[in-house]
Amino acid sequence: MLSPHKKIIVACLISLLVFGLVIISAALARLNPAYNFAEAIDLKVTGWLFNLRGEQAADPEIVIVAIDEYAFENLQKRWPWSPALHARLVDSLAHWGARVIAFDIAFSESSEDLYPGSDSVFAAAIARAGNVIIPAKFERLLNPVSGDPELKFTPPVRLIREQCYATGITNIASEIDGTVQRFPYPAAFSFQDTQYPGFALATVGAYLRLHPQRELGSLLRRLQLEPPYQNRTLINYAGPAFTYPVISYHHIINGSIAAAQVRDKIVLIGATILEMHDYKPTPFSSQQRPQMAGIEIHANIAATLLRQRYIATLSPGMRLLLALLLALGSALLFMFLRPSAGAFAALLLLAGYWALAMYQFNHAGFLLPLSPLLLAVPPVFLLSTFYKHKTEAQERRRVKKLFSRYLSSQIVNELLKNPELLKLGGKRTRATLLFSDIRGFTSMSASMPPEEVVSILNTYFDVMTRIVLKYDGMLDKYMGDGLMAAFGIPLPRKDDAERAVRAALEMQEALKSLNTHLKAKLPRPLQIGIGINTGEVIAGNIGSELHTEYTVIGDPVNVSSRLESLTKTLGATIVISAETCREVEDQFFMRDLGTHTLRGKSAPIRLYQVLLEKNSENPKLTEKEFTDAM
Image (cartoon, rainbow, N blue to C red; front, side, top):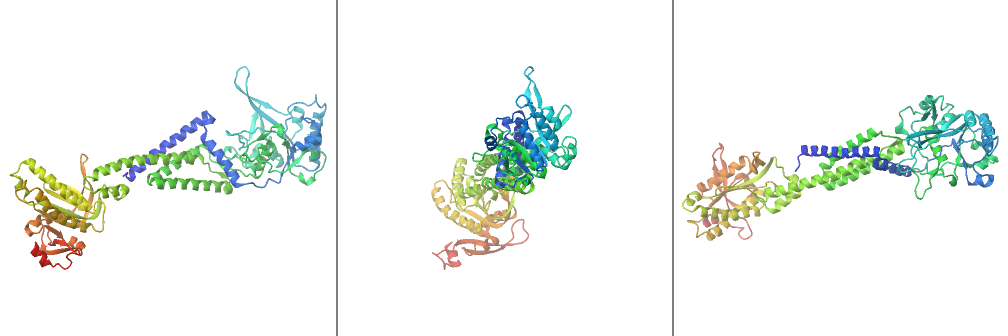
C-alpha cells in the first residue's frame, strides 16, 4: 500500500503533469484558435447557462425601429433608401421626444447620384434633432502589394458626420464558434489621433448626457468600465431573438404609433429583413431558435452598459491558477479514495461545480468557467486511477508472494481485498503464539545421514504447516526442528486462541500417522512439545535494508517459547498459559499444572495442560478419566 506521504507526492506530480498539459493547450490556442479547446468549452457552457437562466424582460428604455418586410412592402422603395426618407424618420422621432436616435445603417457613400440633395436634407434633420448617432466601421485588410495587414476606417460621409452627435463603431467580433458573446474591447477605437467609441457605448453616452468622445473617461467611470475591463465584456442577453419589441420603420414614417412608445427612450434603427444578411448566432441560438439581427445585438449591449448588468469572469491567468488548484485538489482526493469512490467523487465535484456556476451566473453575475474543471479533473482522475491500479496490482503480487508462504489462501485473499488491514510497518495487536519442537531430534539425527534428516524434516514440516494454515494461522518461521506460528496475525479474529489449541491437538494427532509413515526411517517415534500463549505483540516487517521478513515480536512470543521448553519437564505435550486458558476453557478439558517461574521472569505464572476437546461424544468425561487414558 502507498503511504500517505507517497500518495501526496504522487498527487502533486500528477497535478503538475495535467497542469503542464493545460499550459500546452493554452499555448496551442494562441498559435491557432482552432485548438482553443478551453474557449470552445466555455462558449458552449455560456450558451447552456443563458438557456437555463431563461428569458428576462427587455430593457424598457430601448426601442428597435426595424427595416423589415412590412416597411419594404408598404414603402415600395428599393434599397438603399433615400437619406431624405431617413430625415423624415429623424424628424418624427425627435418630435415625439426620442432621447437618442441611433442608426445601424452605413452612410459611408454619398447618395447625390441616386438622390440629389438628400444628404443635405438628412444632415439638416440630424442637426435639428441633436441626438443622432451615426455608425462607422473598421476593417482589417491585406495590402494588395505588400501583403501586410492594414486597418481601414470607413466613416460616414463628411456632411453627415459633421452634423451627428457622435460616431459609433459597429464592429462586433464573433467567437471561434461563430456566436457573438462579447461587446468590443477596448471601449474606443483609435484612428488618426481620434477616439471612436463602440456603437452601443456612444448611444448610452448620449442617453446619459456624457459625450462619448469628448467625455469618454467620465463615461467609462460612470459605467464602471475603467480599463482594464476585458473580463467583464460578456453581453448580458435578455433572451433569444425578438425579445426586444420592434416598431416597423413604416409605422414611424406614417405616424401610426403613440408618442409614448419612443418618448425619452433610446431608439435603435436597423435592418431585420433576412435579405440584408445582418443576422448572427448568439448563446440562445439553436436549430429551433433563430439567429439574432445585428440591431438587436446592439440593443442587448446597450442594455448591459446602461444597467451595468455585467457578467464578470476570470482572467486567463486566474483560469490557469484555478486549473492548477483543481488538479491538485482532485489528485489528492482521488489518491486517497478507491476507484469507485473516486469516480463518484469526480461526478459529485462536476455536479457541485456546475451548480455553483449556475448560481453565480444567475444571482451574482459571474461566469465561473467550466474549462479549468473539465481540462483538469477528468485527466487527473484517469491518471490517478491508472497509477493506483498499476501500483495496487504490484502490491497485490508482492503481498501474495510475501504471505502465501505462511498464510492460508483464504487469509491472503481477504488481505488482498482489504489491504488497509495490513500495516507492514509494524502494528500492535493481540495474538496467540504457538511454538512446537521435536523432542531429542538433535541427538537422534546425529546418527542419521544428513539427506535422511532433511527428508524427515521436510515431511514433518509439510504436515504441520498444513495444519497451521488449515486453522488460519500464520507460519512465522522454522527454527531447526522447531516451528513458530501466530494466530490473529495479520488478521485478528475473536477465536484466535481456540484455533491455536485446535491446531495443536491436530498436530499431536497427525504425529501418530506421521510416525507410522516414517517408521522405517526413524530410530524411534517422533514426539513434539507445544507451548501456547496469548498477549499483545508487534507484527510487521523486521530486518535490514538487504532482507526483511514479516514476523511478530514481544514478550508473549518469548513466553510461548519457554512454555514449549517446559513440556519436557512437566510431562505434558501441550502447555498453555493462564491468558490462553481463560479464552478456551469452555471448549477444552485442561489440567492445572500449577505456577511456575519462567526463565527471565521474576513472577510465577499458572500453566495448564490441554487434554481434549469438549464435544458431544464425551461431554461427561472427567479429568481422572483423561489422566488414566494418557
